[in-house]
Length: 149
Image 1 (cartoon, rainbow, N blue to C red):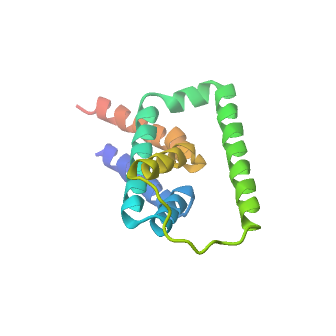
Image 2 (image 1 turned 45 degrees about the horizontal axis):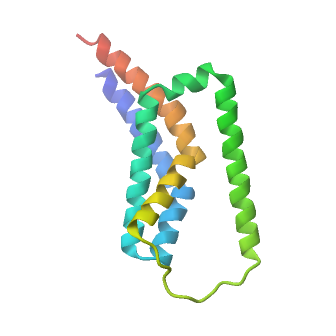
């Protein structure tokens, strides 16, 4: 019965992270508005595959690696910070250009899914969630399942 508490904790933290908008929300909204609804759905699929990738990495021991190898944790933080700075500078530069009133841009379902996958994999919120909380709950879950008769 203890694993149900752990699962409820995991779901509640995941829902809290889902309702706060971030890069994932922006990529799906932007793709849906500028390309098409179908491309937005494929962007969502790309994000789902990125979440699955993070979950597999967490279950394979990413949390263990990050807690035991400080240099790896710091490297991921620095790379994530540099990525966010680059995105911010790109947005600032783009803000000075006037918006063009054009129709939907040409994009394939593969490119929409690939872009969303990259955003999902480089999203710092995903790294924090799957690298710490998800891995912790999975370890607690596996411990309570193993100790049950």
